[in-house]
Length: 552
Image (cartoon, rainbow, N blue to C red; front, side, top):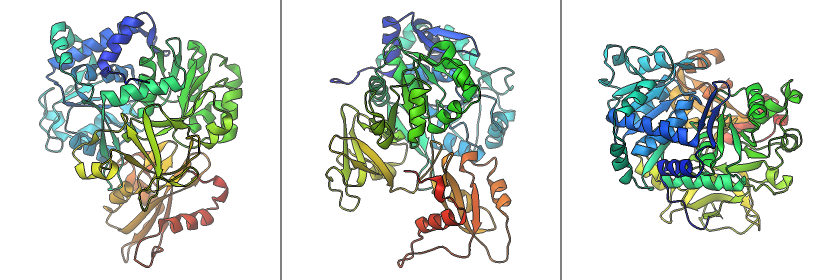
């Protein structure tokens, strides 16, 4: 990329719809939906105008709490066309997390589906915003989330205090095209357009502010690394609320005129069926997804010879899994990507012609127009090849900052513009990076980043708990599992199940401790700091997890 793409997200779609009007843009196999780029752009324009009719303006925050439904992708571009900021809400969140996100993000609108897995979204929202039951659509007045004015329902049988997504489309028909054109003329590619929440070491999730320029260019370079063209067709089973879905998936496709073929809810059989039926040339996933597909009893029945590429990311890939993806799934040019939400998200990526050893042992080399350096964690000085230090990056991909958290932003981005990832890495003489550990105290479970402090802050609210330390222990299937070491208040008793029950329905299931240990004290340094690494070592021995494998 000699020159960065100058498009806004909406302008990008306009351009691609002109270049490839009849190409498949968005295909849902199970729904029978097939939009060409011309059709997809038109429905996005209609919804954009509907949002204007609803009173949404440039800079307003619009949250979406839904799995991979078609409306999600439409909203990604519709909000961008009017300069509204799309706030992506993790589908696994429960009431405490939802309330925090809606309030901290100052969201004016929430789009949601009825439910996901074991969570009734409508009931959860009623718990967070009890005023809804007595409110009229568009006239919400909530003490807990004061900015919220509208709730838009995606699906059938709309609750009476919500409006349906189809109504937004209808409203758009009454807005002149010129009104939308005027709004688009005043958009800037450096405007914030997307906000994703990443859990913080302070215990509170931080809203990562990403611009048009951030995600359009990152999406383009991701596609370039996979050698994408307008002839490619990508199966997207990873969630849209992550950058994996909405940037590595959606924008990697749209920047190249390729077809998006999402899977609404991950199911290995559905993925295999989708790849075969749509002759997908690429597929994304975390290692556990690829393992589930490869190990499905019906795997041999599917013709996957159309596959060529894709991305495996989220956690380290076992070499045998990579070999099988290349051999048995025919994805000979599968790539590995590394990054974080704060970097839009991909920093490094392997290339399609890299040998398998590099695709397993490293996370690739920096994208074009991206700087990467390894620095000494004590002095900050740049280290030579082969030396371990913190991986830092600089360039177009660095976020604008954390929403309403200037101090946290200053900790993450230094005065020189370098984003400090908090990950330990080693770079070789050819620029290939290997992630070797983490400075920040983070757990990665099946691609989900979990910050122990957030879970600790929640568990501290239990009346029986005096102190709690949360850390990760190895797990063969998920990479890591959450463990909590708890000191109880004097004279009380508690069971492991009580701890988990206290968490259910309040924090996401993947954050609930898999292991709980009640202790009298914690191992400490001479200066009084708790040594979590010792708690982890003790747990590995006691739980006999030595063979589960360490994770980076």
